[in-house]
Structure formats: C-alpha cells, structure tokens
Amino acid sequence: MHKKLFIPGPIEVHPDILSAMATPMIGHRMKEYAELHGRVTTGLKSVLFTEGPVFLATSSAFGVMEGAIRNLVGKRCANFCNGAFSDKWHDVTLRCGKEADAIRFDWGTPVTAEAVERTLATGKYDSMTLIHNETSTGVMSPLPEIAEVMRKFPEVMFIVDTVSSMSALKIPVDELGIDSCIFGVQKAFALPPGLAVFTASEKALKRAAGMEGRGYYFDFCEFAANDVKNNTPSTPCISLIFALDCQLKKMFAEGLENRWARHNDLAVYVRGWLMDRGFNSFPAEEYRSQTLTCSRNSRGIDLASLKKNLDEAGFAFDDGYGKIKGETFRIAHMGDMTRTDMNELFGAIITILPDLA
Ligand SMILES: *Cc1c(COP(=O)(O)O)cnc(C)c1O
Image (cartoon, rainbow, N blue to C red; front, side, top):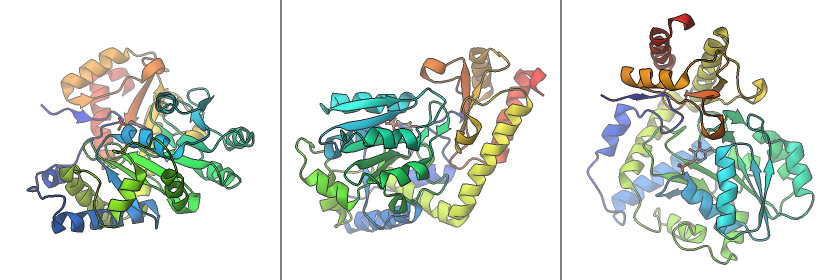
C-alpha cells in the first residue's frame, strides 16, 4: 500500500509527474535534450524572477550547498544557524576546509536582519549562508529584511537555501540580490528527489572563476560554460527533468499567484485546525512557515504511537526532527497539496484520537 506523504520531504508526488518520469529516454547531447533544458530553465527563470542563468545539478540539495561553499567562500563564511539544516551547512562549510563561524539562534526563532548586519559589519566575512525556511523547526526567516541589509555588504556572497519555500511564495531572486539561490526539487516543487536547481549572479560567477579548489562536479564555471549550449557538465537525471518540465507546466496553468495563495491558505488552515485543538505553534507566530507547520506537542499525545497508527492507516507522519523529536511534530502542506488532502489526514488523526474531534 502506498503511504500518502505528509512528512516535510520528500513530498507526495502527483501521478501526472510520475507519468512524465516514464517518458522514453533521450541522450543529453541530442537536440531534444537542449530543447528540454532550454524550456525548463526558461520556466524556472519566471518562477525565480531572475534573468541570470539557472543551473540543473544531478544531486540532492546538499550537493549544490557544498558546491556553493567550494565556489564562493574565499576569506571566511558566516553560517546563520537556526535549525538542523543550517547547522549541517556550517558543518559542511568546515568539512570543505573553509574558515567559518556559526551564528546561532535558538531553534524556533528566525535569523534576524539585525544579527546579519552586526555580524557582517565586523568585516571578517566574504560570504554568508542562510536557510530561508528551516524545515526542521518550521521557521521562515525574514528574507526581504535580510536582503535589505545585504545591500550594505556587496563584497559578501549572499547564498540562500530555498529548498522548502521556492514556488510556495514569491522569492524574487534578482530583486533580493541573492548571489546563489539553491533548492532541491523534492520539497516545495513536489518532484521525486535527485535534482537540485541553483542560480549564480554575475558577481558569484566572477568569484568562482578565481577560486581555488572548486573541484569538478559542482564547479559553477563548468555549469555556466555548458548552460550557453542548454546543457550540463555531466549526464543529468533526464527523467527528473521531464518531471520538472511537467511540473512547471502545471504551475503556470495554476498561475504563480494562485499557487502562492493556495500555500498561504493551507498554512492558515492547518495552523487553525491545530490551534483549535490546543496545539501551540513551535515558532513565533510571525515567522511560521508557509509550507509546513511545526507544532508543539501541547496535548502531550503519544506521537510515536500516533505515527505508527497513521502509518498503518496509509499516512506518513513526522514526529519531529533532531533534538525536538517527540516535543514537536510537523505537517507538510506544500507542493500540490490541497485542503482535501489535509482533511484526509485530519480525518485519520481523529479516527485514531477521537478526543481531537
Ligand atoms: C531537506 C532540506 C535540505 C536537505 O536537502 P537534501 O536534498 O537532502 O540534500 C536542505 N535544506 C532544507 C531547508 C531542507 O528542507
């Protein structure tokens, strides 16, 4: 039996997308691939609001997150950390042999523009990493405010992970001045995992060109050189790119604004349902994610048992991540989900825990 995914990644994949994955194979040096690549990257530029190049890498998000470090961090990197994924990005930065500091915030709180300004004003850094939507805690940091502060530090590379937010709300990459915006497709894009998308500003490509030790597989310069031919440095996951082509068509058919509105509606709906039942939000109100709800286990329910029962009923449910497992639980509402899907999950929860009806 297929268990419907309500975990925050990978996300439930629509049958249309799964069918697109079964498209007969083409060669990546054939003109059919260049057409596909050109169409997909053009579509992505509209979703990301960028006129710069958009690259396709065959890896999960962390491949490119590591790549960005190797290509863009010269002097020292400020890793802003407010959850498990941003903590891991700091660790990855150190493992790449780069000088870096973790600027830590309590889990459940956002990265603030003030802290970014205070940190970068020391002049110690030539790069910074930010996770827009910390999937481990359900916190969305105030990207526009941080972007405003970043204008004062043009020498600092602004590297942003939008894995669980891109396409769920407007993230205008060029207007925000993001030097490299990175996401994997298995979260907000609701595709199977294995493909990462990223941008590189002119400034970023210039920095990369002078950087030692960028390796090969995630060398931004290799991506740029191949992009002009609508191609990738090595063989891409073509089936996933067929899926992305299909998903972009679906996004444009729905309309980006409608997609943002649907995500907002779902976020409000899920929070409301939980709050009506006495569950408090883990993040502060104004920083709650648009794509997943991380709730405190305020009613002290046995989350492991709920997870097990939901599993048997055909639903994959998340009982918290890392050090807040058991204390919190997370419900994803991103990608192609609708209120009907959420009601299906809520119905199953009530069947298991009738007190929550
Ligand atoms: C899931 C997730 C990642 C990890 O990506 P992989 O695709 O597993 O490498 C990174 N950042 C955020 C915000 C995520 O939600």
